[in-house]
Image (cartoon, rainbow, N blue to C red; front, top):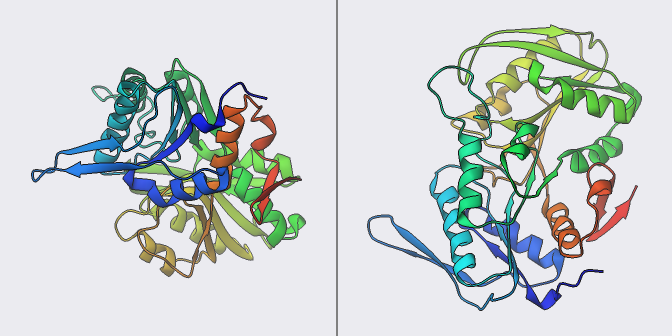
Length: 326
């Protein structure tokens, strides 16, 4: 057991993911921390904790989705906790924004995900909990512990419940996601296929080809982010044209920019399964949301109790507020 006084554990919410944070706190078993954000007329804002956190372990839950105010609000809340003499500060970032900028893919561009890691550490955070980073190496941008959770903890149980595994084939919408599809296939004893994608520029696909056979299979496309929806919809169309019985997508972070929801609704996808790391801008009969609140609540519990997160990654399911081992 931990030597941390559980009365000194606090969970606070940023405005971007307040609903998720409230459910995480409820599952963990404590009330959501009291905080306010004062808004100036010109758009400047000032977060404030409305209770004493001196000597406490403070978890601040905020996805860094656009606008960048959400990132800056998280940084300010970390600074706020540091100046209020919190013992430990943990940033819980369900969706780590700017993660697609994890390397220099051409001259004269930033590595924004590294810059954000530096900013979080400079603000005073002691630990980060996040889920399905766009690139695993982002963990190495930090000089503090990073607990990296996986959407597979939610998607794999759903797949087992909904399908005869023998009829399922996994697919990656691009070469970069082949590792993810391979992990699912290996874990569940299936095969996987890939789509080769060439972009003319960001968010614009020039060419896509299917590598592998999908005839007569229920195909599940896997990815970490769905933004405009163009890649997933085009991949689904190609897979369906090649004889798949059905095509679904399971994607952790529903960015869903612009008219992405309309594209999903007009596509041949039977279902898009996502998590609630990002609140949906609007609902759709084709979009099914798996809550990740229990996963982050359990991760927080294990961090507080110095427990291992190893068996949390791909082997747990949640039923009626209780976490069961599979």
